[in-house]
Image (cartoon, rainbow, N blue to C red; front, top):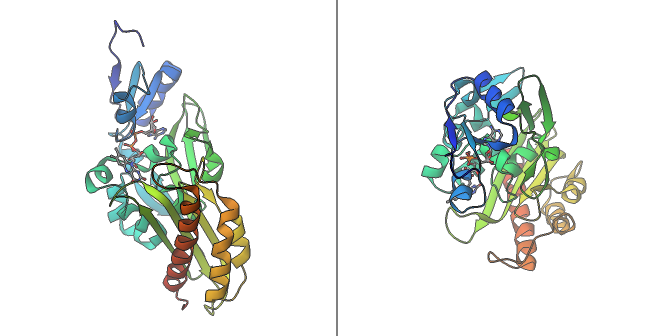
Length: 292
Ligand SMILES: Cc1cc2nc3c(=O)[nH]c(=O)nc-3n(C[C@H](O)[C@H](O)[C@H](O)COP(=O)(O)OP(=O)(O)OC[C@H]3O[C@@H](n4cnc5c(N)ncnc54)[C@H](O)[C@@H]3O)c2cc1C
């Protein structure tokens, strides 16, 4: 940054103006949503930028709607708006995570698009969205593309976003059949970042005895949030039983790579992942109408 000229701060009121600013300023521009992560990085000196584009006043980016069984959530929708949205109450895997993100002040400003743009592997909202097979809709001045969330975060704190693009919205399909989901985390302090967080979403057959589809995803166990194919493959098409849940939960260790750090050892986190895996699977099955 040129120390003689202060950074410029823009507050566009419509999407085209925001995208025009991004196209004009290229990689010297940074998007600001709720400022909950970016301002911290700036204050700590990890980031500098010449131009800030604040998208919090673009009403098109703060809407939640359902069309043809697809849920659309605007990128600048805050966690609090999601938490209280009647449409989002149908997805307990998501609401569980929203209730435990930090504290109400952060939930009032933090946004779904800001979380995905920040790309921290410990974010609580990412595993639930992976369980819902969410897509990320990206817009630039001349193009729109939709990327599966599972492909959007490829490396630590890095997303598949070009300098002239912003996250416009997040979409996911309503599940078909009896379904239930859950998210749980363990944190060292109440409302703190997860030491490990685990989300599950199950779909049962019409007789509520067989798991016809299952997604399991975790936060804080590697460079990005991850799905656990080992758990999913172990459970799909199986009868509901405590034995199958216990066996599947042990398999989660094959898909995670946690680090030793101040929040706990890799061994402890692997143990936590297995325990939380059992808990969210049981809760999801019961919420879907099955019984365990
Ligand atoms: C004290 C504290 C505790 C926290 N604890 C937790 C916790 O327990 N669990 C948890 O999950 N999170 C936690 N968070 C982080 C919180 O989830 C943030 O809200 C989240 O990182 C996004 O913040 P934001 O929406 O304000 O985005 P910003 O800070 O405004 O932006 C974050 C990044 O995303 C980019 N960005 C923003 N919007 C877009 C967009 N539409 N398109 C493209 N890029 C975009 C920005 O350029 C920036 O790089 C905590 C944060 C703080 C400050």
